Figure: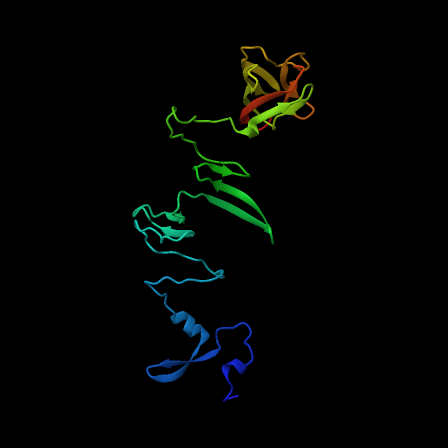
Length: 252
């Protein structure tokens, strides 16, 4: 075995760290363990290492301690993580380094070998979409002028509810304030719900009613069977209504 080529040796199993390697130290060949080599290894500074593949860190953290302090990442389309770009904020900085224009950010969850779900997206236009779950915060503070943005915008297509004639639509559990806006221009309404009761604060066109089975109207009432508040369409035709809710109590 003394004259065997390295390529002719048996492949090693997982290293324990105590295995011995030959190294040159002070002009002499000496032995060192794998652990010694690993401990004495120092990072290479002032250079960029390129890996063609994936990198994986196990048994610890991947820590970036480079103080960017106003330094931009290289001009190379990809993603970069830095620290303290503001030179005083001490923040972690995430960069989309696509320099052909403004890009977006997406957060994904892998659910299988070739399956995934999107959890959150920051679009090119700066719109943040959380695909599942709720936002919990001490407060939400709008910062756009009323001439350019609405502080609360309920025009999302998901809030437009189409109810066929004689059909019903149940709201989620809870009670509070509900805004109704018929998309056909038939009427708007503001209704308070509390302890199984319904009270309209605003219903100028009398398009809505707080009583079940009132003919020719859209009725908004408490449904004891489901424990929720319900919309009932008895107008004689299908109606599409924007329904915007603010829940102030978890139960009805």
